[in-house]
Length: 277
Image (cartoon, rainbow, N blue to C red):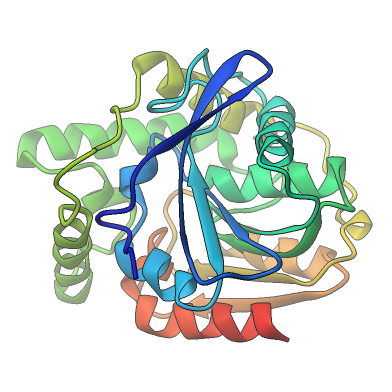
C-alpha cells in the first residue's frame, strides 16, 4: 500500500484556486480529511498518524488556501478558512466526510461543522479549543518566545511549542522530527510569511470573538490534547468538550500541544475505534 512518505501530490482547481492535496489509504465510504496546524504544510503531518488512520480509512490531507503549494493567500479569519475547506471537499465530489483537525485545523473543523452540518459525520479535534476562549491573546508572545529559543538552540520552534522540555518530551520531539524527515521527494512548499501572519491574526481574533454555540454541532466529536499545552491550554479543550452535545475527551499525560504525536501509539487506535463506532 502507498504510504505517507511516497504518496504523490495532486491538484484540483477550486473557484480558480489550485489546491494541493494527497490522498491514500483503504477504500472507505466516508474519507477522513486532515486539517493541519499553525504554520504547517502537508509535510508536517506525522506519518505514523496518517498511515495508522489510512490503514482503515481513505485519508485526504491538503493545503488550504494560501498554504504551501496551494495558490492565493491565507485569509485572516477562521470562517473563511472553513468556507475554503468546504469548497475543497465538495470539489473532490464528497458529500459526507470525517474531519481530523489539529491546532488551528481543529478550529477550522469547527467552522466546517457549523457552516455545513450535513457534510460532517464525525470529528476529531486535537490541540484546539473553542472560538472565544480566554488567553488566546497571549499566542503571539508564546510563539515569539519559542522562535527566539529555537534560533538560539538552532532547532525547530516546535521543540519548544509541541513537547515538554523534559527527558521524555525531548525524546518524543526528536522522534517526531525524524518521522517528518522520512519523506524525501515531492516535498511541499514551505509556509510563506503572509500565511504565518494571517494565521496568527486569525487565531488571536478568534480568541476575542464571541463564543460559538457549540450545541449546534450534533455529531460525535473526539477531543484530545496534552496535559501541559502551552499554545492552547488543556482547560480550553476540556471546556469545549463540555459544550459539545456528544463529545469524548482524552488528555494525554506529560505532553503538550503535540500530545497526539507524542502518544501516537495510543491516539491512533482510539481514533480508529471512535470512527468505527
